[in-house]
Image 1: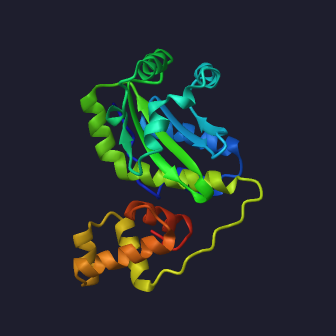
Image 2: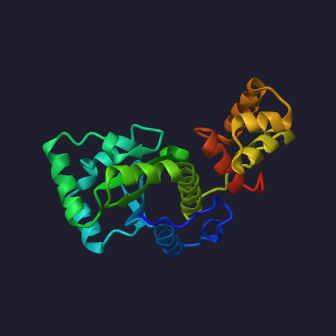
Length: 242
């Protein structure tokens, strides 16, 4: 797999996400991301509490129509599995044991989706749930190397993408911007620029125990699922700048 080097948050694509004003903008951005990462497909799939589906992505119109006509949502192991998870998931970790799931997988591969996939579950306000997925046709080793290399970047991009999609909801009220302390801001800024936790603690001359306290406080204020999500939300809201 030949992949372009993507530097998180210095790429113009992420700036475009912040300025996205329509579904068409998101579609254009997701196509750019697909090309940057050198994969066959990237898809953002949103399912609300009423079962209504919304999405943008690079799947063919034939597959999207077939997915809806066959009501694959009710058996899709990616959607079903990610709805029970909070962390990024390789498709090989999902349950494909049922006859319906195996048939679905064969159908997807025949429609060019790829034999490998990596999905990031996202939970937003008011029960909103979405999945950001990359898929490709390659060996297990190639895919494992790819997802290990870009895992952090993909998590951040997925949450940025979801925040942009949320702003397009009609009548949506903006979320209140939390107040981070100067120390919390320093911690998240250093983490965003690629420093390890030990490097952050050394730079700020604090113990790792104190560092964890600052991270947990920032996560709570930002209503983030994990540290990476906290960094993404802080960047999206302009609370930190790198």
